[in-house]
Image (tube, rainbow over all chains, first blue to last red; front, side, top):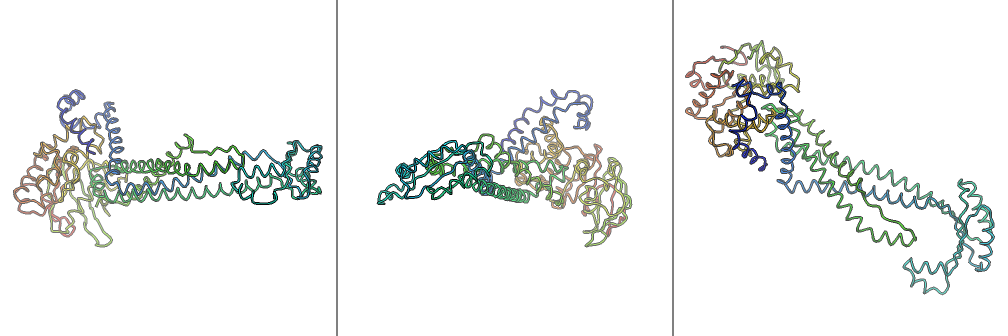
Amino acid sequence: MKIFRSLYDARDRKTPARPQRHHPKSKTATPARADGPKTRVLRGDFRDKLHAHLDLHAHAFFSSLGRLVDSPYTTIMTITVLAIAISLASVFYIAVANLQQLAGNLEASNQISLFLRDDISEASARKFAENIRGNPAVQEVKLITKNQALEEFQTFSGFGEAIKALEKNPLPIVIQVLPKNTLEDGLELEKLLNTFKQAVEVDFAQMDMQWIKRLQSIMELARRGSTVLSLLLGVAVLFVTGNTIRLELHKRREEVVIAKLVGATNSFIQRPFLYSGFWIGFFAGVAAWFIVAVMMLIVKQPIEELSGLYEGDFHMLFLSYSETAALLFISSLLSVLSAWAVLNYQLHKLKPE
Amino acid sequence: MLKFDKVSKRYPETGDVLRNVSFHLQHGEMAFLTGHSGAGKSTLLKLIAVIERCSRGQILLDGHNVNQAKESQIPYLRRKIGLIFQDYKLLQDRTVFDNVALPLLIAGYGHHEVPRRVRAALDKVGLLGKERKYPLALSGGEQQRVGIARAVVNKPPMILADEPTGNLDPELSAEIMHLFEQFQQVGVTVLIASHDISLINQMNYRVLKLDHGQLVAG
């Protein structure tokens, strides 16, 4: 505001020379009231009008920012509430994206795990594995002995010491069978699984595909849940901004009434409020990004450890540049939209006296 | 310039405030609108500025039928009228300059034009040099003159004043009235609502008198 004022003051001092240089014709041809904007537009001089319009926008752009700074507590509270809502929606989004990535990695494997009976010796287990290798439907077989399993478990589970306390290795021998890719359809796989299940050596056979399928349906649930929640949070953003703008309008009611009385159009009156809406949304978006970043940093380490436990090379996804831009765009847009809706409604209701 | 043709205004709560009011103000004419409190002076002014709409009849302002103006046209109609109020209606948190510049910014004047016109308007009301003051730092008479500068800065063909001297002492009131005369002399149509009979009688202008919503003189 102050900058704008001093801007005008500065121009003010220069005025004696300027208008003449700028509109020499209007001075000589039409001395009295005919040098209004209409005549100039008719003459085709849009430049001054355009400049005036840009000036108004620039003024609204910065003065709305200035007003937010003028009442810092209200502004901070509003922006914090919005940022929390937006960051929650973003976190859901990222969580789903990460899960999807995880599921994507697993999708390729339709591996079958055969847990052998405890009384099966390693030698017979190897023989059994060889048998399976002979099955034309099988592409690859991997035997995990009790000791290998124990080692793995000790390294990754964090229960290493507890395991050592046990007298006997409780882990079974596991044979991992990777069926040929041709067995894409479930029926053939099911058949293969059943053959394994009937083998004497096998205590328990499990197709990884099954839990992938389960994971996928959980994923679908998560995806829909997060969409619904994001929509709800978006509605919350609309209402919070709308209410802030309504209060701001109420606070500046007198000014609005006077502007109306001296011939301001609704769009003139709305402009600074729309910019307020934009700033609120924009800053809430920036704050939300930081909240998300901090949340991600906090969970990053445990998640990577967890991923290590599954021998996965899982890299946590974060918001990309385009997603960050989308976040800022959506939060700004939502705020501007709600400001616009509130202003349209309130200004129609508001009579000058 | 301004023509009322059998204009009535009825409020659902209070009934008829104006009844069959007809008059015609010529271009460049100055007139007083008088009557007891509640006679309908303010309502009449509100109808001209389309703050309210009349229930019956027609109001022609500069050839435009005010009553048929669409919501979106009202701002442009109001730019033809300089409104002056008893309570000045200045923005207290803006300087005199910004207050007077408001109608120009609204009308889309460029920044070359705005300071020049603001200074011209302030010069006319004798406040040049007080641009940077805030309204509260000015006396009542000065504040009203800021209001007048704001009303004329856009060079509207018509000025409407609602009890412009209501809060001022007789001397300042006479000064303000003299200002209005000066605008009338350069061709502006002026309509002043006032119940200050002694002041009105000092000046030799047409008087429109309202009594319980009806025009009884003028």
